[in-house]
Length: 165
View 1 (cartoon, one colour):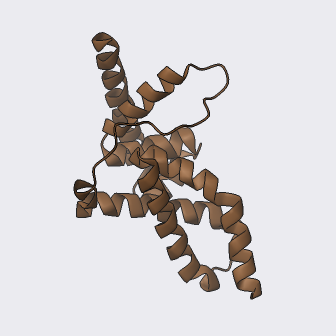
View 2 (cartoon, one colour):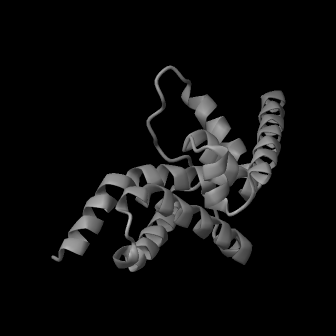
């Protein structure tokens, strides 16, 4: 195995789980999240030899993931796949109720893709407005407005689900 392949393999092993979590928050389906991560790492591998700054890989890989997700949404690929009603098993964060997590993830899946991408990058990945804007290739003002609209949509969906219960 070449040094290039060994370095890529080490990066993949270290970061694929975290990227899978981000992908799941974007698309709401563990199988599709796996596909997004695989596509993202394939694109990263193709560019691996040209990358000079390996310390900036996390941001670059995240950017590939988000753009792949948004590109699929524009192409309409998701319309040919059916989501399962079953929720994948995942460890709940300490102190929270698993039911709340499921309700939140269901509501997040209903938020429009651009707004969801802003919410995931800002509040899950903890990126700044400028970093999020760079990933999404938009202005900081767009990030602010999309995040605000996304939070408003998410709050509305959560209050609607609360009324149903």
